[in-house]
Image (cartoon, rainbow, N blue to C red):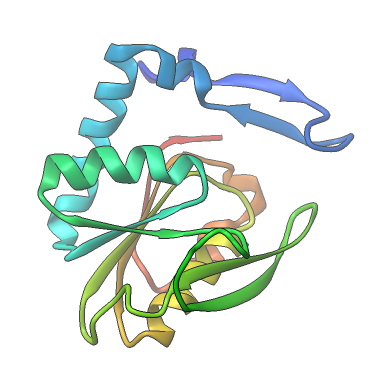
Length: 171
């Protein structure tokens, strides 16, 4: 058993019946667990040499912020519509249980910048793929994707290929 697995809580039938939600809040609450998860993610992404980290709303902000600080990188954020105060680019996509839209400030990425996309969980890959589209629409390069938890049976990694994908815990 991976040392961090004990900090992931299963919530059955959330957000709808049949879904087993992987809750990372116990990991965030545990200082040693959160620190270790951040260290492992940094080890995985440092070789990808990102210029910026893109945190996905909202739990991606937590890991993205910690990693940006630790690595001395800038942090940009992808948010739900109407949450960013400046001009935005947007992309809509399908989720495993619905659809959604994400926005990114139009001036977030300079042409050619390498952007690492980070979130707490990789399921079907729709959210991360939408962020990759936002990065490419601003002429950025996707350096890779990093996740704390990956639900491999949903095959989200396949949607992100050929971009590098790393995760700590795989279910």
